[in-house]
Amino acid sequence: MAENGICERLREVEARVLAAEARSGRPAGSVTLCAVTKTCAAAVVAEAVAAGSADVGENRVQEADGKQPEVVALGASPRWHLIGHLQSNKARRAVQLFDVIQSVDSVALATRIVRCAEELDREVIAYVQVDLAHEATKTGAQADDVPAILEVLAAGSGRVRPAGLMTVPPYFEDPEDVRRYFEGLRLLRDGVLPGGGLSMGMSHDFEVAIEEGATLVRVGSAIFGQRNQNVIA
Image (cartoon, rainbow, N blue to C red; front, side, top):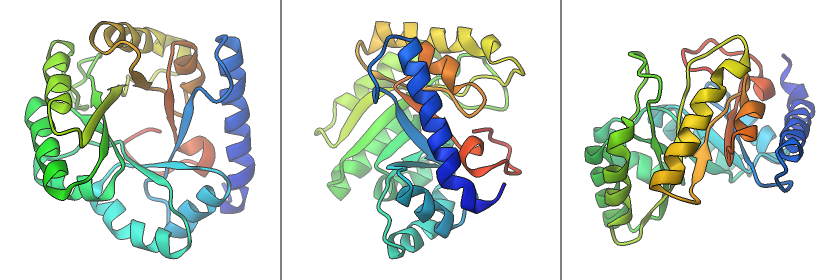
């Protein structure tokens, strides 16, 4: 897809989000759209921000580290989300770079993020990534471990705010086959963090995710076109 179609495709995705909100009896604007900009050049990110993408998501700390200064130089200041796996030794840099870390998947990582946020005097929003399908190729906390992770995130000096749960479900041709995972995350959220956010749904299935209660969807290829990456968005 041509890069000059970003604005048009963004409007199309936004319209689909609005329609899914309406079908679910939810108010317009109740779902945050995070544009997944992995592998996109800084100019493309800036173009998406100019078109209205207030939130952008990156999979890797290293890529965001090199890209962010260029994006800022182009006059764009989005809210940055880390949506990919985070290694503990990169937690400090992640806290410096990202406003939202969606991939907290262990007590050890949560502890490290809280410590770094306190040392850097930096406020960070955090989501606990949950592995509901037990796929060997994906990361995420087990459901039983989520309460302990949330407790660590909430027990700091207030620099880290546990905002909700996130999941990356298996890919199915029929988005309806993913619905049970979205429902599972919602039910888990209701038990451990009532009223918390739900980051779930990507380009292929975000409408089903919204119907199941998503408050944040992560959409990449529907806005920027297909990219040769292992992570689908």
